[in-house]
Image (cartoon, rainbow, N blue to C red):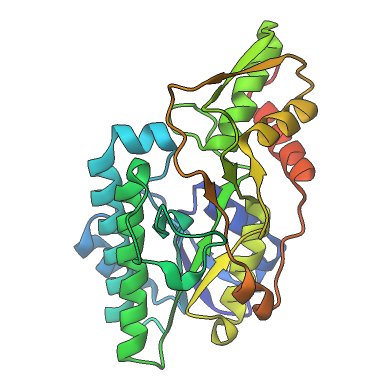
Length: 311
C-alpha cells in the first residue's frame, strides 16, 4: 500500500518515466501516469482540469518532446513550442490546484555553450546556448525559472528542479531519427554486426566528451528526492561528475555488442558542444551518487534492445 501519497507523473511512457515506475521505491507511491491519449499536456484547460480532479500530493514532470541533434535541428519550432507549453501548463495547473510539491526534470542543455566545465547550477543564463538544441534548452529554462519564481513568491511550496546529464538505458529510443548518442551507437553497431560491416562512421573526430547517466540511476535520484523534498536544493545537477569521449563510447559499446571493425570519422557532420560535464558538488552534499558503471549500463541497455530486435 502506498505510504507517501499520490504522485502525478508526466511522461510515464517515456524512458525516464518508465524507469521511475520500475524502481523499487515507486511502490511507496500511488502513481498516476497518464499517457498523451489520456492527457494532452499542451492543452492548458485539460491539464488544469486533470490536476484538480486527481489532487496529487506531488507532481514529477518528466514529459517532453526529446531527441538528438538530428531531431532538434530538423524540428526547432516543435521542440520550443511543445516543451514550453507542456512545462507551463503542468506547473501552473499544479500551482493553481494547491499542489505543495513539484519536481521538474530539466536538462544540461540549459547551460551556455561556452561555459567552463564542470557546469555549475549558477551558470544558467550567463551566455549563448548551443544552437543545435537551443529551442529545447529555452523551453527547459522557462519551466525551471517558473518553478523558482513560484517558490520565491511562496517559500512554503516545494517547486524544485533536477538537471540530469545525458541519459541512456532501458526504454530508450533507438531509431536514429529520434535517438540520442548511446542508443544510436548501440543500434548502429548492432546493424553493423548483423550485416557483417567492417566499418562504422563516427560524426566528427570523436574527441568531444559527454556525460551519460544510466536512466535507472536517475530514477533512484528522483524518487529519493520525491521522498525528501525539503532537503533537496531548489536546483541540482544529477550526473556522474566524469565523462567519456565519443570515441570511448563507441569502443565500449563495441566490446559489449561484440563487433570488431574499424571506426571512420566524418568531419563534415555537426558534433555540438566539445564538452558538457556536470558539477556534482550539490549532489554530493545532498548525499547521493550513481551506482551503475558504463559497461554495466551498456549491457543492460543492449539486453533491452535485443528484446525488441531479436536476431
